[in-house]
Length: 407
Image 1 (tube, rainbow, N blue to C red):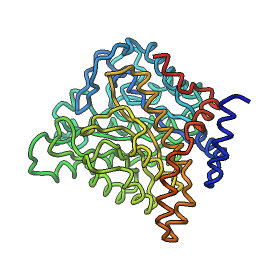
Image 2: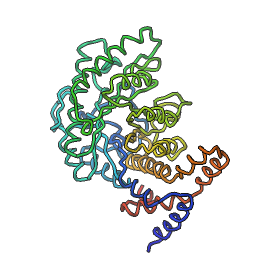
Image 3: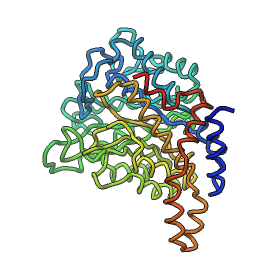
């Protein structure tokens, strides 16, 4: 028996005393996918245009060396990152990562065939795929509006892009046997004081209605809409706000809500919102990021909010209702390591949620034994979680803490 196994047996016994089955936790961890975003590897440059410059409220700050120079190097770096993250995974793609073989393919012309290589990649890796239309970094998004644009030519272009991305998501779901979440985020908004806040939102409703008009098997493709409080160039008004999308999802029932941790007021927490949606049986998409001042998209760390997010999901037995993905940009450190750190921390937070003695905490709370609730909750913080994590990494043939020595 290895030292990792010996340590795990000690932890297993300790957790059993508070009613937690660590073997069951390890099984759940192995089977619960977290969607790892592909764009941390190359600062969301993609393959559409090797000289692409991010625009539309998207920034990757920092100048660390090592950004991949070509697709081959990109795939090599992505492989290294994914191999450092244990357990089930999906890979979230953006539309600009299409295989265009050097040809100019406009975004309203993309087809599933342009992503066949990614399906082959996913099959080889035994992972699922999620998808994101790229409604930014394009000449027809330069004025800050896409699906809510008052220019009908521009709006029509982006509507068609959204429709085609749904077809690609459906293709992923059918080919891989795992549901694809096709997540729609637009940068639309105004920099300064806005008088008519209604008209852009009415146009956005119409655009979304057109995009989602085609019925699809929810098990193949599920669409999500991602809100934002404000962004670069949309500091005063964002068409697709949290309130707007909450109402759209509730009224239309043709998509689900995506909440990004960094897209809210600095004093808001996404973890406190989850139960309100689950109470009405709503499915959610979650983008785990780390805001420092606002939507700064720092690498996910094992902070209180990340742990609270996962605890909320586990407490309501909602792993089948909340789709978990990562989303951050950091060009100031090694991009492979950044992807791995964020992915591993999201997984660690999920494990901590699963190791919580939820049933006992709910029981004593229902009995109004608030003293025991606090005491038990605090004692769990010093339990040997790291020993269970090491066992999980060993089971998945993924490096434990020694992986950091490679960077």
